[in-house]
Amino acid sequence: MPDQITTAYARDLLPARPNDAHKFHFGRALVVAGSPQYPGAAALSTAGAARVGAGLVCLATGRSLMGGPGRIPEIVYTLLPEAEWGMLGEAAADELLKTLAEHQALLIGPGMGREQSTLRFLERLLGLDAPRRRARIGFRIAVSDEDANAISRPELPPIVFDADALNLLSGNVKTAEESTQRGDFFQRSSASAASVDEDDSPWWEHLPHSRAILTPHAGEMARLLGVNEITGDPVTIASDAAVRWSQIVVLKGPQTVIAHPDGRTMVHDGPNAALATAGTGDVLAGAITGLLAQGLRPFDAAVLGVYLHSAAGRMLQSDLGSAGGLASDLLPRLPLAIRELRGA
Image (cartoon, rainbow, N blue to C red; front, side, top):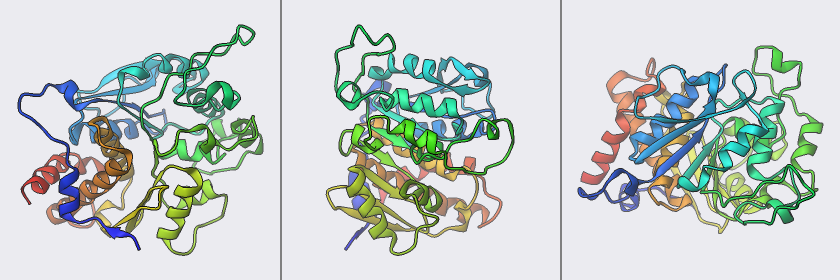
């Protein structure tokens, strides 16, 4: 049986905040987010990481998106080359790999887009475009002189996969024709799915065990599992996926389930209509990443992030009601949820 996330349990997970600390005691979080169609996702996810206490948050995005809306001034930038206007590609991944050692946590996906070039960006960043013996995440490898495109694979920090990163991993990308049109129609591309598995192994076999957190809602989980929709017990679905993928799974919903591949599961019952609005998932992904940056283990960061996000949502509903609140309204309530939890 899964355990409920209690207030006492969440309080014990809060990272320490000594008064004599400086910002780098609280970690650097790197967020890969945003695209021309979804610029706000970058603002929400980076602010989410900052609002839970990360010492420094860096947004990695295309150079043309630097002036995106609503970004807090405290965010710093890593501006990346673009494969096409606003979209990342393989060259951006090569640039980003050079900076990863500076960061304690990485978030990939909010509003990033599902273009073919973005798929290639993710493949290159994660080493999915080369055989595992040369590109497995977490291991330094020798670069072959005969492979001019090979680059040294740094050890990646703990990663949160959210939103479009989940769709790309599941093989849902835009065709070239769709990339020139508006809309949110997801189409499975067999060619793209094959490119993710060039060495005939699934994406999760390229990742070190228990170092990644996947944060799907029900639709994203269905795509990851290759089904039309998920039915049945969410706890069982999340737990089975965590074991299969050897990663932490946060299956979002009225009852959010956090599952570890070792069999641990925790649930949080927090149905709240105030959270049923665009962008709240971006805030949650950012909050989990900000907690990772402060040194929490992936499972603990996921559990505490879910608790704080829900607590901020309850404050929002109390203050503004169940309709009309925005995802950005959650942001100033995250530190209030932390203060309340410390004093509870």
